[in-house]
Length: 321
Length: 226
Image (cartoon, rainbow over all chains, first blue to last red; front, side, top):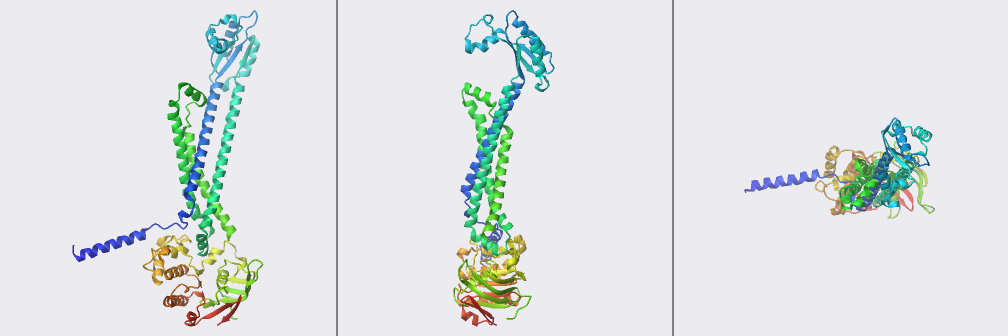
C-alpha cells in the first residue's frame, strides 16, 4: 500500500467517524439515570399485573354467573305433592301436559321412580321402594325461550287444575347469583380503582423525586427561556415510556398466568377437582375480554403515568418558581 | 442620570432584602441603554450576582420599580417570563452547562427549547462555536473540558439566540489573563454588533483595558462612573 492509499484510507475513516458523531442521537434533556426508573418500572409492572388479574377474575366470575343464570333460567320444576285418594302420577302427567301447552316451553317430562330414587339416594340409601313413601312427583320443564313464557299464568293454571302442584322457577337462585355477580364486579372495580390510585401516587412521588434531582436542569431550561409546557413534555416523555414498559410487562405476566391456568392447571388436577372447577367456572378461561382488557389496562396505566407526571411537573414548577 | 424611554432595563429606587433581614441592595437607580457596554463591579459579596438575578427576573425587588423591555417587572406574569428571558443572554459564574449534553447540545439549548429542529440551527451553532474557538470541541462533554472552554461554551449558549442584552457574571474569573482579554474582545465585538453588554467583574486591571461605563456596587449602594 503506498502513502497516497494510506492517506486516502485515513481520510475516509476520519470522515466516517465525523459522520457518526454528527449522526449521534440528540440527548434527552432529562438524564435517564436521574429518574428512579427501574424501581418505578417494577412498581408500575406490579400494579398493572394486579389490575389485570383483578380484571381477569371479575371476567371469569361474571361469565360463570351469566352461564349459570342462563342454564337455570332455561329449566323450571313443577312439584306435585301426593294426596290421599288422588293418583299422584295422573296429576303429574296432567301438570306436564298443561306445561307443554304453554308457548315457549320446549319439553316437560315427569321424573320416574328410578330417577326419584337416584335423587334421594344420598339421604335415604339405595333399594328404596318409592311406592311406600309419599314422595312428591317432579316434572322438569325445559324452556325454549325463558322470556316468552308467562310463568305466573302457568303457576296459576297449575294450582287451579292440578291438586298439590307448585311451580319452582328458581328465581331465588337467579336473584342470588345476580347479587353475587354484582358484588364481585363491585369488589373488582374497587380493587382496580385502588390499584390505579396507588399507581398515580407512586408516579407523583417518583416525578417529584426526579424533578428535585434535576433541579439544575430545570433551572437551566428556565433561564434559556423554556416554557413550562416544554419542561413538562420532557419529563412526560420519560414517564410515558416507563409506564408503557411497566404496564406491558405486568399485562404480559398476567396473560401468561391466564394461559397457564387455562391450559396446564386444569388437566393436572384430579377428575373430581376438575369437575368442581368446571362446575364453578366453566372452562376456567378468561377469554378475549380478559386478554384485550389486560392490554387496555397496560395502555391506560402508561397514559395515566404520563399525564400524572405532566401535572406533577406543572405543580412543582408553579410551587418552586 | 441620563435615561430614555427606550432603555432595555431600568431600575428606580430598587431595594432588596431577604425575609426580615437588612437590605442587601439599597436605592438602586440606573438604566441599561440599547447597544451600551458597562461593567458592574464591586468587592466580592457586594451583591453583583444578586443584582444580575434581579435583571434576569429570578428575584423580585422588595421595593422600587424595575422595568424590563418597557414592562414593569411586578406585572410580568409567569407565562410572559420565558419570552422576556429569551431576549436576555446570561453567562453564570458557574457556567451552568448540563453535564449530560455535549458542547454542541448545550449551546443549541435555547433554540431547542423553542421547538426548532437540529437541521434548522446546526450551521448557526457550529459557526458560533468556531467563533468562540470551540470548533473542535463540539462533541465534548463538560466533564472533560477546561474552565476556559466551559466559559466559552456558556458564552456561546448565551449568544446563540441573539439576545438584546448579555449579562455575564465574572466571565473571566476562571481563565488566565490572555484568555480573559480574548473573551473581553469577544464581548466588545458583540457590543459592536448591537447587543447591550453588562459584565460583572471585580478585576480592575481588566476594566482598565477597556473604556466603558462602570456601575460600582458597594455596601448595597450603586455609584455610576460614565
